[in-house]
Amino acid sequence: MPTLKNTRHEAFAQARVGGMTIDAAYVEAGYKANRSNAARMNANEHIQQRIRELQEAAAERAEIDAARVLEEICDVALSDIRDLFNQNGSLRDVENMPVKVVKAIQSIKVSSKKVPGSEAGETVITTEIKFWDKIAALEKLAKHFMLYDGNGPENNDPAADLLAAIINAARPLSVAE
Image 1 (tube, helix red, strand yellow):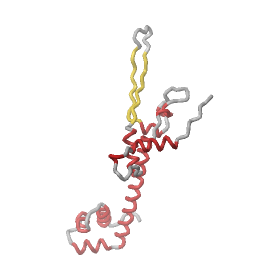
Image 2 (tube, helix red, strand yellow):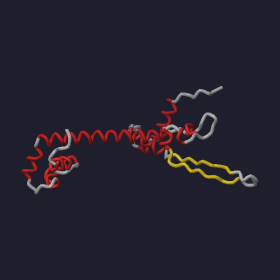
Image 3 (tube, helix red, strand yellow):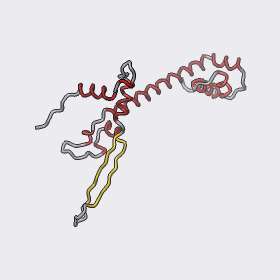
């Protein structure tokens, strides 16, 4: 259902979805306070249908947002520094790094320094890459997946438990000959 043609009715529906009481939403929509008129408007089938539609859309957005947050935490928690490098050991260009690895990077600092004693003015370029806190991300995942035991977090190390579970499930990488 598209927005309601009556802008006051639409404002009322929006205010109700925003958590306002019937009376407050009625005033917010531009009407004078009147409890019985507010109740009658709230009972209107078109308005109720619009409120349900807005609530469903909000719930869907919240679900997508929650899934996105969990995905971002996973990208940090499960990041692998080896993905920063090519097969020959050189650092990949940022545009060639996997997206999941780029999401795990907090900052990249590139600096150059002249090599002492070089006649040709040679410089050394240093790239410093800082990742987001992996342990904090692992702990958030452990809490989300309820990996703490019944005794509470003070008696359990969820990050260590999650890391152990990941290590136990990992398969060895094949070594090129």
